[in-house]
Image 1 (tube, one colour):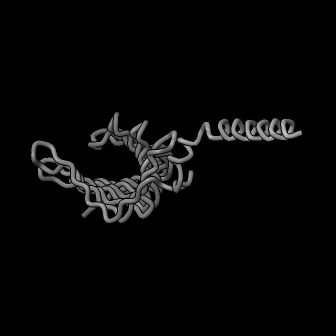
Image 2 (cartoon, rainbow, N blue to C red; image 1 turned 180 degrees about the horizontal axis):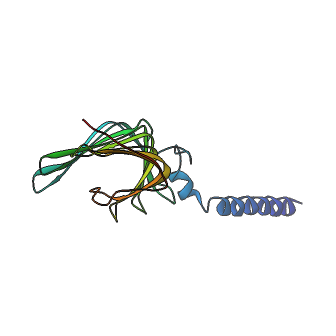
Length: 183
């Protein structure tokens, strides 16, 4: 009888240990994720003042109250929930990009600006829209949202915009109105 009880106890212990062994198979991945919710950023930066230099000269200055780092995702990105101000410098000329919200996708190098997007170039051209995309690889700006584009002589309204980053071939799509401004 003792032999049967000992045999049952050994069987129960063996089953218990095998069950524990297989249930702990993915424990390392689970330990890495402890404290990190799937919906939470892996990092938060506040009061950003990031400067990019080329040959000792500042070429860009990014200012933002907050950046959320989601680079741990399958499709990594950085989010600027409180907006950005980006100052771009070219030969002592300054252009400015402002938006209420921005998101940068790492894999595609696509920047999505949303909410009161305003770009003011060094030569005082102004683009206003609710959403604007910037392809950093191609250095290309585009949107299909309504836009207002002000040049020295015209205010052009339309439903879309395409341009290179220097605005040398800026095009308002589906133009809804052109107003010539005279001083």
